Length: 263
Image (cartoon, rainbow, N blue to C red; front, side, top):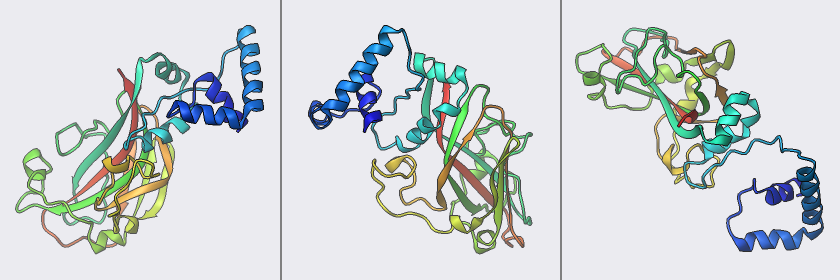
């Protein structure tokens, strides 16, 4: 509780009401007084807290933001300062890409030849924009077919009825790297077979509360969120034992999380 009391005195904590504040003070009078004395001494000595304070709104979409806040110490000093002075902000974000898998048993979902195209990809050259950082909280894989085309385009993807990945892909695996870091190593695609149908509340640990994941096909919430830094090349490589057999088949991946970007 001592650390919580310090946060309360310094104004870094999130207090929902005056009643809650007074209740905590009454329960921890001695600790609060000690914290106040320590805070006063630090202020007198001209000391500054080294703790990074990231304001996370108490909304249904804040779960992934809290995961990003927990990684604040891993951010560069420039990003930490940007969040403190308001030149940077943390926002809900998704990264997605669509690739044709007709006759294939593997595919690279992000490539350095990719360009942004609505419905097909919202990331260029398989990298975040310069000075952006992404906290990966969940992954979704979807599968669909087109009547006649094998070319990912705006017209193609809007005609696809996205569904759960088929058995051939469910029995596959994927590896995911960001720069030189391995985020997932030969992870079973089976995790994308089932999907949540629960009404996720704002207090849930699931990413984004009701904003993300409610009844979503192929949705997998990470137990260990990952930090992807600016300009790290994304290499998401699913592979399976045999081609699906469908004509004009497409695979879509969506990465869910929070992003730090300039205001």
